[in-house]
Image (cartoon, rainbow, N blue to C red; front, side):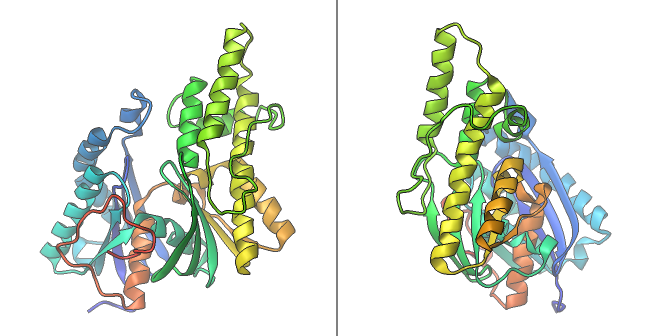
Length: 344
């Protein structure tokens, strides 16, 4: 019998982090993460097979650490939630297989959830129930999406997405051009603090095209061409200025489009999630523009922005509380799961 506030264990393995979170209702009890980012750094990006093997090795110890941190036993868990998609196929299958095994062995319900909806739902662990409706801007290495969210457990609508590179992907590629290392987002954020965001007029793709979509491929190419031209001329590359100007171009477009969605749909609450939501300039510019527009801004603390098990557990808890039927044990891993499918 599931209690009013269920104890839910969530498993996240969509990319390069093995995350296990435990929540009761909207209260976070544990958030254990094992990252394989250092194993990918020498390749300059995530290698799917390396990620899958790292998940296999980390799964057991990470679950044990989460249970210990929460001070609960496996038998205390009321339900399991797992990222079923989108993500890397092999990585997803590791998490889904583990969740199936645990749910079956304990006779507990299983919820296969959408990774993007989980990024929206995690904010409830910090700021309480989401306003209905709200707009969500999700920005990460694989996704740049604008969502209208009447109800995170049952009704999430995609209004805009990237037509090429995601924002986080562009950060990684520009960091590679500047020889700054991987992952690029945190490094560029740090280097940009010493630079001038107006030093270089980089392009802003689809800035005023009337859509809610994004394009960062042209910006990435423009940065690479600018750096190459300096190097050919034998001139030093002002890394801090390049980083700041590139970052400003990205966050300018992201915040402009997000507030356009809010205005066009009469919504007064904006949530920003995903790994790029940890970017200090994005948070600052969003706060500034939201205040000017009369829009309330919600952004989780940086640790909850990146991929983690807490967000999966949060969405699982929301689904249990809403009375949603659990997933079948034949639950597949769907690498291209659409955002409209909150529960698979």
